[in-house]
View 1 (cartoon, rainbow, N blue to C red):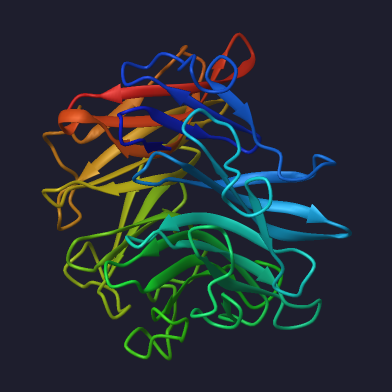
View 2 (cartoon, helix red, strand yellow):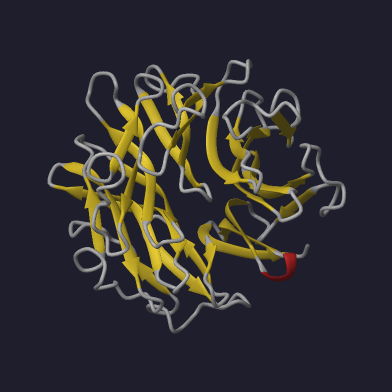
Length: 369
């Protein structure tokens, strides 16, 4: 989810892009009844994963598309009314092949100069190195940027086999960070992995070890990142699942990639949300440094959309909702929050899915400060 310069709310799912007016109504001027289908491939084998809006209101979507018998990174750009942008790529679409069978874009980022960065993962072969964390950069018209990596593309093998991107960040100085789960084998007990590239696509020697961070914070278990945010001071906040069942995991790293020891315990905060499963899916940092995290807590058979807010040191903010925790019942039959955005006047926009009479529907809500 993101907010357009005119206040319109854009919400992306795997096959649909919707736009709402600032007061939450479907925007009838966008597509058909406020929505357009996202279909990168003529045969329908594609999916959208990341969304961004340019300062001029044009909309970028990334994901993957099938080209022949393989999957490539795809980027599409739309005009403000939802029609494909004829000035971008071919008919509003570009794709990137990293040389393997399954490449995916997970996040799309816009630089101040208009260049476009896609963060994702690239399949580099059936034997090691397998999936690598990857990024591509394009000129504003969708042509690959030759000043970034090789032909506009970069990739790094973090764990030797299964590196899957979850989020991407663009620093003010143009450095690119890709965050994901990384594992040696088929994905058992993955660690948190991050890669940072310089503005020209070289691994950043000031970050981790030769631009790479792999950590489990000294707490072996399952580390599954879902989203990340960049603080103004350069520290990186990552949320998802950690080594504690039924809890949100929130981690923070210093600008050099080391765990931030001033945050929680060893750079990690885990917040139990009751019996069952719980996963943080989205995060944003407010201007005052407080951290908002959203996702779901599952007490079978009902999932509850749950939003938490933390103080800058990682303690739960007692002034937010009820003891730092807001639960959204929607139709009373369960729901999940998948994304967050800053609304007007300090409000929070949260969106995801909800159950209404046994049917899954789109859910969008706005919370007061």
